[in-house]
Length: 466
Image 1: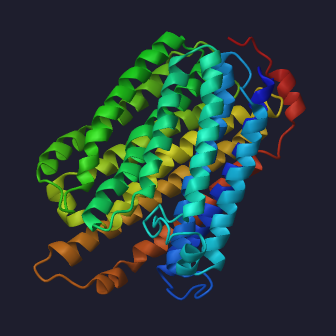
Image 2 (image 1 turned 90 degrees about the horizontal axis):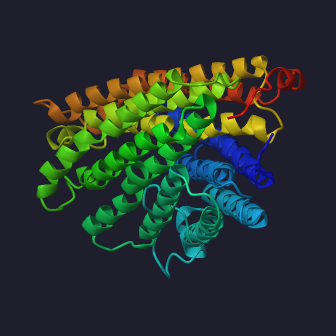
């Protein structure tokens, strides 16, 4: 079923991504219970370690998904085999080994000792949220990224150029370039936070959105048969709005760290515009499906594509806008409202686009157009369980955040942090319950890979490919 044999290198990337995703959810459940029982698994897995593992697994599995997506769609878009399939497999094993060893390091070695063992005294880069990786791991990530980008770029340069591959390359190169700021760790805390956002914000509210748009456009072209020219026009408008609002909107993190005060009004204006490209993406996805020229048998992939646009708009757009303006952020910064926005935005924009491309590509990589109806029912059940659970988690954290702001920061007689945490415990119990529903949804998604009469379905679903 594959058009190009080298697309097969995407398969191990997708499998690794899903395995690491499961690990991320397990550690999220551990953290959620530690909010309720602080000594759970202590001292084996203290909260700070569980949190590092949870967030680092998120980053690594998303990167595996992005790389697998690129290795799958670039040959098809470029109409030629991948420049070097062997290099793609080599970078897979290097990246997987580096990721696993880093996670084991977090779990088995005290963080200060790990820093000492891995050369942090030579170039201090550790100890910052999301960028806790040891120096050796960061160097490994850069090496893997450069090899990956060389492989992908050479494939594109030697083949057909499309809007999808050009936008994807822009996003992937931006991802690698902005990660270099993780090596810059100035002693001045304001400078540190200023440039720290050049990695974190410019990833998730900048170049990662280009990757999201390119992958979504590719899947919609394949499952709807809509003319490429229509998709490309939408894609260019969306990425233009993304770059304009995302780059300048970085300043909404600068409100309270000592940066010039012009960031308060400048980034308030552009941050208020950040939901627009996500809303446009939602309109884009539904319009493409409504104009479809074929009924693709992979209904699950179509559902994931539409769901990605909607949940990304809600999480990154609506929940981001709720507390991005400076007068509001003054009270909400660092509360559970931030966690609510982060969970729904990461899941909607990036976890779901990875699951979208996996849902579309994995059946083809396994030799069929689409999974069986039984398998797709399991997959779509997983979709609804995960989406419902994540929306519930977001609402529970939003409720906790509103009460936290009122009792701890806005009230005439504010309460202490720990007193407030005790008063909002009910929301943490509900979040934990929703987390187990999410895990059930993920397991249902996994089940779809192992059920159904695939051979019979393959025979029934042969159709003329556009």
